[in-house]
Image 1: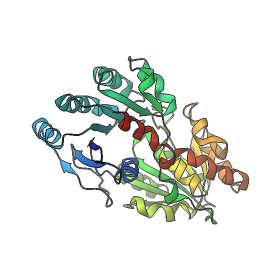
Image 2: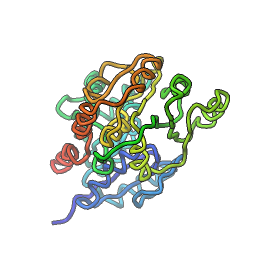
Image 3: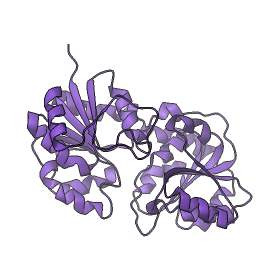
Length: 332
Protein backbone atom coordinates (compact mmCIF):
# COMPACT_ATOMS: atom_id res chain seq x y z
CA UNK A 1 0.00 0.00 0.00
CA UNK A 2 1.38 3.41 -0.94
CA UNK A 3 1.95 5.98 1.78
CA UNK A 4 -0.26 9.03 2.06
CA UNK A 5 1.38 12.08 0.56
CA UNK A 6 1.57 14.91 3.11
CA UNK A 7 2.75 18.39 2.21
CA UNK A 8 4.12 20.52 5.04
CA UNK A 9 4.02 24.28 4.44
CA UNK A 10 6.05 26.09 7.09
CA UNK A 11 7.12 29.67 7.68
CA UNK A 12 10.82 29.54 8.69
CA UNK A 13 11.99 25.94 8.62
CA UNK A 14 14.26 24.83 10.30
CA UNK A 15 14.01 27.39 13.10
CA UNK A 16 15.89 26.45 16.28
CA UNK A 17 13.11 27.80 18.52
CA UNK A 18 10.51 25.63 16.76
CA UNK A 19 11.68 22.16 17.77
CA UNK A 20 8.04 21.12 18.20
CA UNK A 21 7.81 21.03 14.39
CA UNK A 22 10.88 18.80 14.22
CA UNK A 23 9.46 16.56 16.96
CA UNK A 24 6.23 16.17 15.03
CA UNK A 25 7.89 15.39 11.70
CA UNK A 26 10.24 12.89 13.31
CA UNK A 27 7.24 10.85 14.48
CA UNK A 28 5.60 10.83 11.06
CA UNK A 29 8.34 10.65 8.45
CA UNK A 30 8.50 6.85 8.35
CA UNK A 31 4.75 6.41 7.87
CA UNK A 32 4.05 9.10 5.26
CA UNK A 33 5.52 10.44 2.07
CA UNK A 34 6.38 13.92 3.39
CA UNK A 35 7.42 17.00 1.46
CA UNK A 36 8.43 20.19 3.32
CA UNK A 37 8.19 23.69 1.88
CA UNK A 38 9.55 26.72 3.75
CA UNK A 39 8.41 30.23 2.90
CA UNK A 40 11.38 31.99 4.48
CA UNK A 41 14.88 31.13 5.72
CA UNK A 42 15.25 30.69 9.49
CA UNK A 43 16.78 33.55 11.40
CA UNK A 44 18.17 31.06 13.93
CA UNK A 45 18.81 27.80 12.11
CA UNK A 46 18.87 24.30 13.60
CA UNK A 47 21.57 21.78 12.67
CA UNK A 48 19.13 18.88 12.86
CA UNK A 49 16.45 19.01 10.19
CA UNK A 50 14.85 17.22 7.26
CA UNK A 51 15.20 17.98 3.56
CA UNK A 52 13.07 20.93 2.49
CA UNK A 53 12.51 23.36 -0.37
CA UNK A 54 12.40 27.15 -0.17
CA UNK A 55 9.59 28.84 -2.07
CA UNK A 56 9.86 32.61 -2.45
CA UNK A 57 6.81 33.46 -4.54
CA UNK A 58 3.18 32.49 -4.78
CA UNK A 59 3.90 31.09 -8.23
CA UNK A 60 6.68 28.86 -6.91
CA UNK A 61 4.40 27.64 -4.15
CA UNK A 62 1.64 26.78 -6.61
CA UNK A 63 4.09 24.92 -8.84
CA UNK A 64 5.40 22.80 -5.95
CA UNK A 65 1.91 22.02 -4.64
CA UNK A 66 0.66 20.89 -8.05
CA UNK A 67 3.79 18.84 -8.72
CA UNK A 68 3.64 16.96 -5.41
CA UNK A 69 -0.13 16.25 -5.60
CA UNK A 70 -0.58 15.81 -1.83
CA UNK A 71 -3.35 13.83 -0.20
CA UNK A 72 -3.38 16.32 2.65
CA UNK A 73 -1.63 19.60 3.49
CA UNK A 74 -0.44 20.54 6.98
CA UNK A 75 1.06 23.62 8.60
CA UNK A 76 1.77 25.38 11.89
CA UNK A 77 0.39 28.73 13.10
CA UNK A 78 -2.88 30.41 12.24
CA UNK A 79 -0.93 33.13 10.41
CA UNK A 80 -0.40 30.58 7.63
CA UNK A 81 -4.09 29.67 7.36
CA UNK A 82 -4.59 31.66 4.16
CA UNK A 83 -1.53 30.03 2.54
CA UNK A 84 -2.75 26.58 3.52
CA UNK A 85 -6.25 27.26 2.22
CA UNK A 86 -4.88 28.65 -1.06
CA UNK A 87 -2.71 25.56 -1.55
CA UNK A 88 -5.56 23.21 -0.66
CA UNK A 89 -7.83 24.90 -3.18
CA UNK A 90 -5.24 24.46 -5.95
CA UNK A 91 -5.47 20.68 -5.75
CA UNK A 92 -8.84 20.35 -3.98
CA UNK A 93 -7.32 18.56 -0.99
CA UNK A 94 -7.95 18.99 2.76
CA UNK A 95 -5.61 20.69 5.17
CA UNK A 96 -4.85 20.58 8.88
CA UNK A 97 -3.29 23.18 11.16
CA UNK A 98 -1.50 23.12 14.49
CA UNK A 99 -1.88 26.38 16.40
CA UNK A 100 0.49 27.48 19.15
CA UNK A 101 0.51 30.48 21.49
CA UNK A 102 1.99 33.59 19.89
CA UNK A 103 -0.43 33.20 16.96
CA UNK A 104 -3.62 33.15 19.06
CA UNK A 105 -2.90 35.23 22.18
CA UNK A 106 -2.98 38.96 22.81
CA UNK A 107 -3.15 41.20 19.72
CA UNK A 108 -2.90 38.13 17.47
CA UNK A 109 -6.54 37.32 18.24
CA UNK A 110 -7.44 39.97 15.67
CA UNK A 111 -5.28 38.08 13.19
CA UNK A 112 -7.20 34.90 13.90
CA UNK A 113 -10.41 36.74 13.03
CA UNK A 114 -8.88 37.91 9.74
CA UNK A 115 -8.13 34.30 8.86
CA UNK A 116 -11.68 33.16 9.61
CA UNK A 117 -12.55 32.48 5.93
CA UNK A 118 -9.61 30.08 5.63
CA UNK A 119 -10.20 28.42 9.01
CA UNK A 120 -13.89 27.86 8.20
CA UNK A 121 -13.20 26.63 4.65
CA UNK A 122 -14.65 23.16 4.03
CA UNK A 123 -11.14 21.90 3.25
CA UNK A 124 -9.95 22.69 6.78
CA UNK A 125 -10.58 19.33 8.46
CA UNK A 126 -8.76 19.80 11.75
CA UNK A 127 -7.13 22.34 14.05
CA UNK A 128 -4.96 21.15 16.93
CA UNK A 129 -4.65 23.74 19.68
CA UNK A 130 -3.96 24.14 23.38
CA UNK A 131 -7.11 23.45 25.44
CA UNK A 132 -7.39 27.02 26.74
CA UNK A 133 -7.45 28.47 23.21
CA UNK A 134 -10.40 26.46 21.88
CA UNK A 135 -12.83 29.36 22.38
CA UNK A 136 -10.64 31.57 20.20
CA UNK A 137 -11.62 29.43 17.22
CA UNK A 138 -15.25 28.72 18.06
CA UNK A 139 -15.90 32.47 18.39
CA UNK A 140 -14.98 33.03 14.75
CA UNK A 141 -17.22 30.24 13.51
CA UNK A 142 -14.88 27.23 13.34
CA UNK A 143 -16.87 24.04 13.79
CA UNK A 144 -16.35 22.62 17.26
CA UNK A 145 -15.92 19.07 15.94
CA UNK A 146 -12.77 19.94 13.97
CA UNK A 147 -11.03 21.59 16.96
CA UNK A 148 -8.86 19.17 18.91
CA UNK A 149 -7.33 19.99 22.29
CA UNK A 150 -3.66 19.03 22.33
CA UNK A 151 -0.76 19.60 24.70
CA UNK A 152 2.69 20.76 23.48
CA UNK A 153 4.69 18.58 21.09
CA UNK A 154 7.58 17.41 23.28
CA UNK A 155 10.01 14.54 22.68
CA UNK A 156 9.58 13.16 26.20
CA UNK A 157 11.99 10.25 25.74
CA UNK A 158 14.85 12.60 24.81
CA UNK A 159 14.61 14.36 28.19
CA UNK A 160 13.30 11.63 30.51
CA UNK A 161 16.03 10.95 33.07
CA UNK A 162 15.23 10.12 36.69
CA UNK A 163 18.87 10.21 37.76
CA UNK A 164 20.25 12.87 40.13
CA UNK A 165 20.20 16.54 39.11
CA UNK A 166 22.64 19.33 39.79
CA UNK A 167 21.87 22.28 42.07
CA UNK A 168 21.84 25.22 39.66
CA UNK A 169 18.87 27.30 38.46
CA UNK A 170 18.01 27.87 34.80
CA UNK A 171 15.79 29.80 32.42
CA UNK A 172 15.54 29.22 28.68
CA UNK A 173 14.00 30.95 25.69
CA UNK A 174 14.08 33.79 23.22
CA UNK A 175 15.12 37.15 24.66
CA UNK A 176 11.96 38.99 23.68
CA UNK A 177 9.72 41.30 25.75
CA UNK A 178 7.03 38.72 26.50
CA UNK A 179 9.61 36.50 28.26
CA UNK A 180 10.56 39.26 30.76
CA UNK A 181 14.16 38.10 31.03
CA UNK A 182 15.07 41.28 32.92
CA UNK A 183 13.26 39.94 35.97
CA UNK A 184 15.40 36.80 35.79
CA UNK A 185 18.46 39.04 36.14
CA UNK A 186 16.83 40.47 39.25
CA UNK A 187 16.40 36.92 40.55
CA UNK A 188 20.15 36.52 40.15
CA UNK A 189 20.64 39.52 42.42
CA UNK A 190 18.17 38.16 44.99
CA UNK A 191 19.60 34.62 45.06
CA UNK A 192 23.35 35.12 44.76
CA UNK A 193 23.91 31.96 46.80
CA UNK A 194 22.59 30.04 43.79
CA UNK A 195 24.25 29.55 40.40
CA UNK A 196 21.85 30.87 37.74
CA UNK A 197 22.04 30.19 34.00
CA UNK A 198 20.11 31.64 31.07
CA UNK A 199 20.01 29.62 27.84
CA UNK A 200 19.23 32.42 25.43
CA UNK A 201 18.08 32.23 21.83
CA UNK A 202 19.27 35.20 19.79
CA UNK A 203 16.93 38.14 19.30
CA UNK A 204 17.60 40.56 22.20
CA UNK A 205 20.36 38.57 23.88
CA UNK A 206 22.82 41.46 23.42
CA UNK A 207 20.65 43.73 25.56
CA UNK A 208 20.35 41.07 28.26
CA UNK A 209 24.11 40.47 28.25
CA UNK A 210 24.78 44.20 28.62
CA UNK A 211 22.30 44.56 31.48
CA UNK A 212 23.73 41.46 33.17
CA UNK A 213 27.22 43.00 33.07
CA UNK A 214 25.91 46.30 34.50
CA UNK A 215 24.48 44.35 37.44
CA UNK A 216 27.74 42.55 38.11
CA UNK A 217 26.91 39.38 36.11
CA UNK A 218 24.55 37.66 38.58
CA UNK A 219 23.72 35.01 35.94
CA UNK A 220 25.63 33.02 33.32
CA UNK A 221 24.32 33.61 29.79
CA UNK A 222 24.70 30.78 27.27
CA UNK A 223 23.70 30.97 23.62
CA UNK A 224 24.19 28.95 20.46
CA UNK A 225 23.23 25.60 21.96
CA UNK A 226 21.29 23.24 19.69
CA UNK A 227 18.20 21.25 20.79
CA UNK A 228 20.22 18.04 21.00
CA UNK A 229 22.52 19.72 23.55
CA UNK A 230 19.75 20.54 26.01
CA UNK A 231 19.01 17.21 27.77
CA UNK A 232 22.46 17.24 29.38
CA UNK A 233 22.03 20.91 30.32
CA UNK A 234 18.72 20.32 32.11
CA UNK A 235 20.36 17.67 34.30
CA UNK A 236 22.77 20.29 35.70
CA UNK A 237 19.86 22.10 37.34
CA UNK A 238 17.48 21.72 40.26
CA UNK A 239 15.09 24.50 39.25
CA UNK A 240 13.70 26.10 36.11
CA UNK A 241 12.37 29.63 36.69
CA UNK A 242 10.34 30.61 33.62
CA UNK A 243 9.65 34.32 33.55
CA UNK A 244 6.93 36.07 31.55
CA UNK A 245 5.51 39.56 31.15
CA UNK A 246 2.43 40.40 33.24
CA UNK A 247 1.73 43.21 30.77
CA UNK A 248 1.75 41.14 27.57
CA UNK A 249 0.54 37.82 29.02
CA UNK A 250 1.23 36.06 25.70
CA UNK A 251 3.60 33.30 26.81
CA UNK A 252 1.70 30.09 26.12
CA UNK A 253 2.56 26.57 27.26
CA UNK A 254 6.36 26.52 26.73
CA UNK A 255 8.00 23.21 25.91
CA UNK A 256 10.71 23.96 28.46
CA UNK A 257 8.26 23.26 31.28
CA UNK A 258 7.58 19.68 30.15
CA UNK A 259 11.23 19.13 29.18
CA UNK A 260 12.35 20.26 32.63
CA UNK A 261 9.82 18.07 34.42
CA UNK A 262 10.87 15.06 32.33
CA UNK A 263 14.46 15.81 33.38
CA UNK A 264 13.64 15.95 37.10
CA UNK A 265 13.92 19.74 37.31
CA UNK A 266 11.54 21.71 39.51
CA UNK A 267 9.43 24.25 37.64
CA UNK A 268 8.52 27.77 38.78
CA UNK A 269 6.52 29.69 36.18
CA UNK A 270 5.25 33.25 36.19
CA UNK A 271 1.53 33.30 36.96
CA UNK A 272 0.17 35.34 34.05
CA UNK A 273 -3.04 33.36 33.28
CA UNK A 274 -5.26 30.81 35.07
CA UNK A 275 -4.66 28.08 32.45
CA UNK A 276 -1.01 27.77 33.50
CA UNK A 277 -2.06 25.96 36.67
CA UNK A 278 -3.26 23.08 34.49
CA UNK A 279 -0.05 23.04 32.48
CA UNK A 280 2.42 23.24 35.38
CA UNK A 281 0.21 20.98 37.47
CA UNK A 282 0.83 19.82 41.03
CA UNK A 283 4.42 19.06 40.04
CA UNK A 284 5.46 22.72 40.01
CA UNK A 285 4.85 26.23 41.28
CA UNK A 286 3.41 29.47 39.94
CA UNK A 287 4.71 32.80 41.21
CA UNK A 288 3.42 36.36 40.90
CA UNK A 289 6.55 38.29 41.89
CA UNK A 290 10.18 37.38 41.24
CA UNK A 291 10.73 37.75 45.02
CA UNK A 292 8.33 34.83 45.49
CA UNK A 293 10.35 32.73 43.04
CA UNK A 294 13.51 33.58 44.97
CA UNK A 295 11.95 32.24 48.15
CA UNK A 296 10.84 29.01 46.43
CA UNK A 297 14.26 28.18 44.98
CA UNK A 298 16.00 28.74 48.32
CA UNK A 299 14.64 25.33 49.29
CA UNK A 300 15.29 21.89 47.78
CA UNK A 301 12.81 20.70 45.16
CA UNK A 302 10.56 18.21 47.02
CA UNK A 303 11.05 14.62 45.86
CA UNK A 304 7.29 13.98 45.77
CA UNK A 305 6.82 16.83 43.30
CA UNK A 306 9.81 15.61 41.29
CA UNK A 307 8.19 12.20 40.88
CA UNK A 308 4.88 13.86 39.99
CA UNK A 309 6.74 15.85 37.33
CA UNK A 310 7.89 12.74 35.49
CA UNK A 311 4.27 11.64 35.14
CA UNK A 312 2.86 15.08 34.37
CA UNK A 313 5.35 15.73 31.56
CA UNK A 314 4.03 12.69 29.69
CA UNK A 315 0.88 14.66 28.83
CA UNK A 316 3.04 16.61 26.38
CA UNK A 317 4.74 13.53 24.92
CA UNK A 318 4.30 13.63 21.15
CA UNK A 319 4.09 9.83 21.11
CA UNK A 320 1.02 10.02 23.35
CA UNK A 321 -0.98 12.41 21.16
CA UNK A 322 0.36 12.16 17.60
CA UNK A 323 -2.67 9.95 16.88
CA UNK A 324 -4.85 13.08 17.00
CA UNK A 325 -3.15 14.39 13.88
CA UNK A 326 -2.82 11.04 12.18
CA UNK A 327 -6.51 10.25 12.61
CA UNK A 328 -7.34 13.42 10.70
CA UNK A 329 -5.00 12.48 7.87
CA UNK A 330 -6.27 8.91 7.70
CA UNK A 331 -9.86 10.11 7.44
CA UNK A 332 -8.99 12.64 4.73
